[in-house]
Length: 89
Image 1 (cartoon, rainbow, N blue to C red):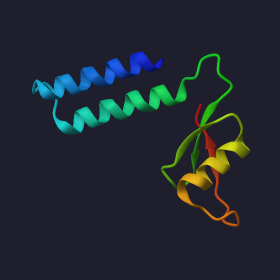
Image 2 (image 1 turned 180 degrees about the vertical axis):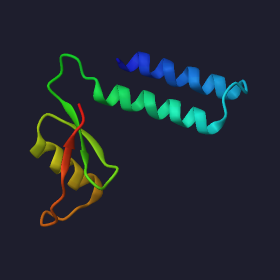
Image 3 (image 1 turned 30 degrees about the vertical axis):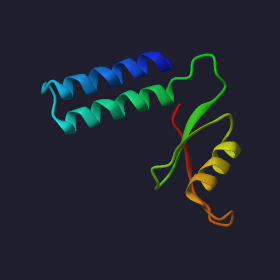
Image 4 (image 1 turned 120 degrees about the horizontal axis):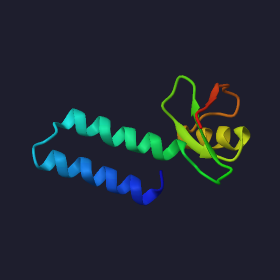
């Protein structure tokens, strides 16, 4: 899914919420689904998504070492603290 499609899908979900066609919980699920789909589909791009196991940190990176560094930066994790990493895309 490209960025424009993702934005349109989020806009459609917000419009349905505003029009009373969807409740907030359904809107949140739909927007989260769009974001997860967008984040895990990188056509013709060497990057992929990784998630820190036991955490909700999901990052886009070209390699596992890069992903670990991004998680450490986002979560302010000490270099000595080990954590698992799961490839999503």
